[in-house]
Amino acid sequence: MWPWEHAAVAYLVYSLFSHAYYRESPGALAALTVVFASVLPDLIDKPLAYQYGMFDTGYALGHSVFVGIPFAILVGIVAHRIGRPRVGLAFGVGYLLHPLGDSVPHYLRGTERFEVLFWPFAEPAGTGAPTGWSISR
Image 1 (cartoon, helix red, strand yellow):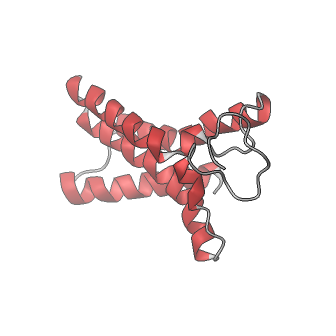
Image 2 (tube, one colour; image 1 turned 60 degrees about the vertical axis):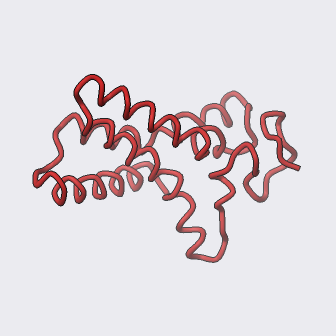
């Protein structure tokens, strides 16, 4: 997906949730947070792969559920403690929808790519040898 597609999907999902659960539109801070969080995995992985050569592809650390779920929980806890639980939820929605948004279209086309969710234990298909950061094979 393109960055604006990630942002649109994440905002739409969070907005629908906000309208259904809270009975109001998302606040400005929550809206900005969900949009930022929806592109954050690419902001982490793409430079590390393409600029610094740390990974073979742009799908690694930021796209992994082993990083994303604990990161989203941590941000949620911090946001709750400072009195902004909706912002923490918006972050989690945006961040966690990103890797799914990258994987689901491939699944629907029959070219499954769920391995991008399980870095470092799986490597995206079609890549070369591990760079040392991956423990697959």
